Length: 339
Image 1 (spheres, rainbow, N blue to C red):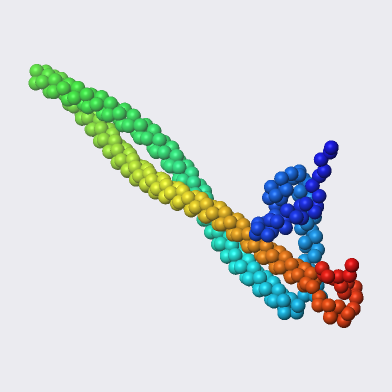
Image 2 (tube, helix red, strand yellow):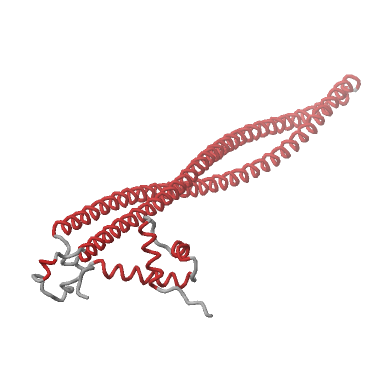
């Protein structure tokens, strides 16, 4: 024989049993109560039960309910709504405040990171310009050194020339001494020797003048070379000092950038923590909503049970004839009605 499926009435009875135990109805719990049925069928019946409950939530209470009990139920319902709204507003305001604070901290960290990147770019550009100037000064120094080498070569040539002239002067002096010795031996060569002396004196004066000029040129070249070398060394020292300061500033800025990056990571971590706390608060809000719905459901169940008790209460025999029949129910309702 084919097995029959789970009906809506079965699911409704299982839901009533769960509500009496104070448990919220779900597909798994309903199936545990029934002991059979597919999850799809139970889910459809549970959805239908919730839809009917929402549709019947705004229906007015039955007219047979006492006015005092109705006022008490309405007062309890109003207080429950006010308490739930206050709790929800408090949790929502607290969560929004924390999220806003986290967003501001993250924005500040991002702005600091952008400022650090801009300063790093500016320092990198300044360092590039300093290195370029250093390269230019290095090229100038190389050129000056080349000029110094040329001057040194010229100085060497002048020294060689001076040595040659001094050798010639020494030779001429020796020759002069030899001529003087010969003048004592040969008187008849006196006139010739006098002319030779004059010629030698003129040559000696000319050679001495050339030697003095060469010495002066060498001294002037040495002074100019020393001055240029001193200037180049001073410029190179200033350039190295500027490059050292730029490297120190770049290292300091990199340290600040790392600190800013660490602060940004900390802010992101705090943001994730606050988001997690917000999710937990939302879960608590949902739980409070569920508890509120459970209280409302119990209140409605109490109203329903009270209404049933009022309708099922026996009516005294002497009052039956006084209660006319109407559309709300038979006048002889109860266990002692007409047979």
